[in-house]
Length: 189
Image: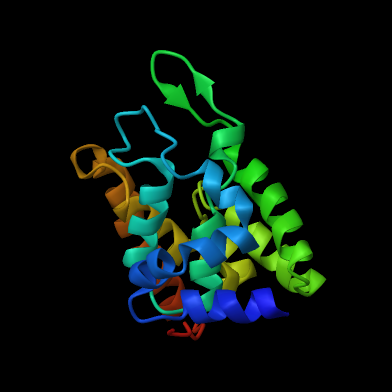
């Protein structure tokens, strides 16, 4: 439980990046898998930061919501363990690897099984486009995944981000349309 309290303290800070940097020793003692992300280069034109700095950038634009921030903290934890060096480095399958690693991390920290499954689902789907049927099936889960996706997109190389930003715009419009036509309440954070 101490680990859960520490994570809440760090991730619920108004300045989450400073909180992480100030508590890095304690955070990496709690989640040593983070050490593999630090300084691990993407070597890909769509990324201008290493894996850890990309994660911090995504967190810096996130709403102060623990579920979103926890998912963002761990969304790319698997990248150093599943890269393919070709003309540029790829990370095929990294959402699934990150979700598996997150499952182990959160169970080690004694999180409830349903909560672990929830966070792992967000992470495993953070690179998958949301479709209308996803929104209709589970609006709140879709909204959380979308928030993680938005933060992730904003942490990519701004010079190579046009398609990702178009996806964000199109999906945001889809949310508005569905909430209007299906009379679904969209919960704000």
